[in-house]
Image (cartoon, rainbow, N blue to C red):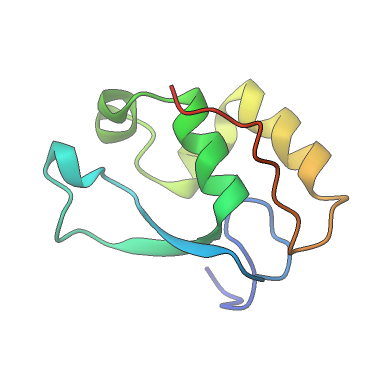
Length: 93
């Protein structure tokens, strides 16, 4: 990510709540693998769309995550929100 003040998924300015997203889930062997800072809502959407196995096997880069149609729709929607916006209705898969 070239601009460390922006979320790599939605490209909005990072603002609380921020989480560290493991590109490979810790439960699938990713405990000591790289993480990226992300809005909590963006990480919640990633985990709502993909299983941990899908994240490990294919969607283990931000570019691959962005390829998915549901994520692309989410990015289009959330990009209009303030960085601090968080929607508690997003449920994990």
